[in-house]
Length: 306
Length: 279
Image (cartoon, rainbow over all chains, first blue to last red; front, side, top):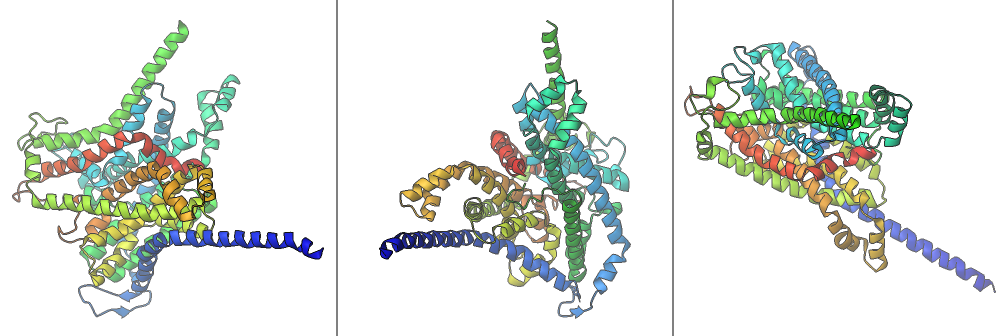
């Protein structure tokens, strides 16, 4: 009798064991499939950034190899007390804040147009992708020639790229032109989630289009806005291509990326270059942290993202 | 009657707005095309459109070895990077979308971190490492960082697409005796092809667009890609500015991508927004 009772238990045990074997096989497969991607990503990012931290404590000049000397934090003192670094930092911050703000405004406008237009929707959505598809360097050359005295249709008799602030605004123009479509697409994905009924109901209750936008649409797409802002802020902080082509950093228009590049490739100063790399890395980390803490930007680590 | 005039005026209003969008998108493109068609004497007239279009700049650029070499480098490096990133990304995205395993969240978080990573912070150490191991100024020397930055984009887009694929088919395949690997190869992979194709376009565009790695990790035309080569163009003589040549090169590397993007507009929009919808 007792053996009869034991049988179902045994069956359950076997089933459990099989299930856990299946689970283990699934786990193994999962890790196996991810392994190559993880190995590549780690070896090309984690290892070099650790190496950069290590190098930043050394006096390392490629023109005098073998003369590397451990100098504690001297490189950091040098960089952080350099007016060139702080000027570049200020310019980078300025470009980041201003261009992200413009991109949000124009991106939202473009998103609404792409979402709502009643004629030629396909045409608008298609042509809005053009700036996204164009190589940044190509677009930068287009802007540079357009603003070059004598050649450009926008320049006329002026030479704005030879002065600091006009140059900065042209850099911002180039950045904004290129990335508004990306911003608009992220926002449009949010707009698609706003229930039509809700907007209609508000309209029936006498809410104007402006009120509907601010009271219903904006709060509902806030997660999309924050994710788009986070991505673009971090991306704008890395600004390099446009400045390199438009001004090469002349007239104090360098960004931190340009200054770091110049120290490495032109100056061959590995120690200072690495120090700047580490400082840029830390700044980016702080911006991302602030975004997620202050605004609760839906930390896109939860299985979703871009 | 009044309702009809209202919709007509609405249509006209939207039409005007659409024209603005078209101008925004196309003016810089038309300008660079126009510049590439201007001859030597009209180059400096400052007009938006060329007075006497000529294809001189194109015949010059196609007989320029540095440009042709750079074009071959660009195409080769970007295709190889896209292919490898897609293979690795598809495997990882399948695991992330379908399987339960420890470390999954960590992998997603890590790819997110990498997509936000300042590339310049990698240039310095990579420059030193690649010089030391002989990868500097070679194709693999560029392919490696390209794959790395393509992978997060690929993993996100692909795993978003993979989540849309019906689970039941995989289960059915397993019921019929397929191993998880077979279920992946024979059932899911064919269904996933549209998503993979879209991701391929996005990844290729990202690689094609790179400039920072291309000028930092190359020094000759052995591996220099077109965006980097363009910044080194010089005129035939010291006094001749390479404006038209740069414009022609710009048009050549732009037009194919633009046509491609316009052709696959729907897919690209879906790809770029796939993660954001749920984000």
